Length: 275
Image 1: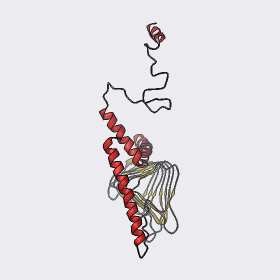
Image 2 (image 1 turned 180 degrees about the horizontal axis):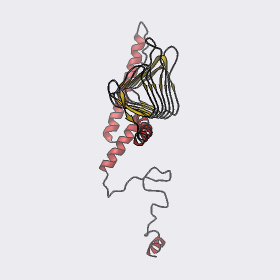
Image 3 (image 1 turned 120 degrees about the horizontal axis):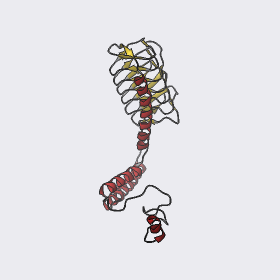
Image 4 (image 1 turned 90 degrees about the vertical axis):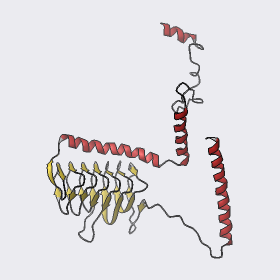
């Protein structure tokens, strides 16, 4: 940590301590006692005493996502930034290895019809999409901005193109590509389409783990990353380079016994190289 950073850190600690002392003094002087409460995160919200059920092996739930009510999310699935999944009247089920893109809304129906929302395995829901009281089966790719509305059923191995609107009560058979508003059959899926659906789900699950790791970092980890980035930018190529994390490493110069393992300190090594 640089000298400037140390000064700022020390000053902030002093200011924080002073603020806490003044807060205690103010609380002691109050006539009517008041306890300030922190607002809890709204990432997970219970409705009617039913809280979301998230598989421990779920890849990533973005900090800005909202999971509300009777929602179940399977393993290796991800819910990206600013998405809302609201099971506040019926159930929403999301399978495994499925990704819900940014700003997507998943909801149910209770007043006009009585529909759960079910999303299968290996499904990719593009950003800004809406799935409302509908069923999406396994191995499906839904393009960005698409809408799948009340009572619709999307079969397996299906592609819904970006911006398409699948109207209420529509059934999309297995193995088809639909597009348009209202969405209509375009063609049968190809081998390449199916390979893309499967590979995209895997790629998104892998990417989700990276985002999860970054979002879990505390301020100390972020500061360390910044120091390493600055070190990498400033360090000349002809200067010694830091080694990978190694329990036997000493001061970034390697393991003891190997630091000076050269032809100068070990003449036998030079003889071996000549042979």
